Amino acid sequence: MEHKLPALPYSESALEPHMSTETLQYHHGKHHKAYVEKLNKLIKGTKYEYMSLEEIILSAEGPLFNNAAQHWNHTFFWQCLTPDAGQPSAKFKAMIEKRWKTIDEFKEAFAKSAGENFGSGWTWLVEDKPGHLDIINTQNADTPKTKGLKAILAVDVWEHAYYIDYRNARPNYLNAFWSLVNWDFVEKNLQ
Image 1 (cartoon, rainbow, N blue to C red):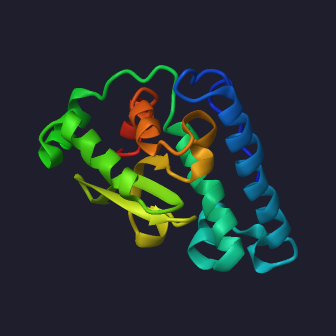
Image 2 (cartoon, rainbow, N blue to C red):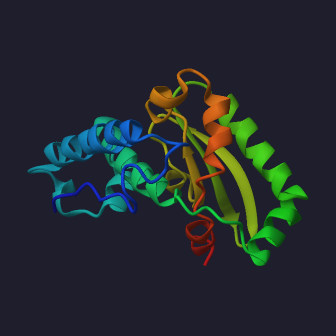
């Protein structure tokens, strides 16, 4: 089965001024595309050729795992973003407030975790058991799937995600991230 680069769920310019067209052209059009191309080369003629992306992630190692997981992570990340961020629903807000007291405290905890995520990786809001949310960091291509956790929200903290727009100021990127969160997608992940 050939894996494909999914189209962005918005135009390349839709996330401006928080995320530039140039960033999306490089991040989606070059980085993510390269993971998909490498994945397809690595699976050709192997037992992984007919596996789903999730099956590959849960059974592969090394470069195959890295490219498959980065493809999954990025596909998930693009859906976490929208030009029409809005606000979380009352139901989701109540879940957040049960764990972090306020939405602002959740955002602070999430941004702190993402800011302290050393090197290249991802920061995730996950459901670790029904109705219980947590924030975790993963390194490089790792994903909550390998830990048996359900991904709810992700932010990419690899430098290629923000360097064009924010240079080395990851905190500024994380601050802008909240203006782009697709709360509808986040809440659907809890169902």
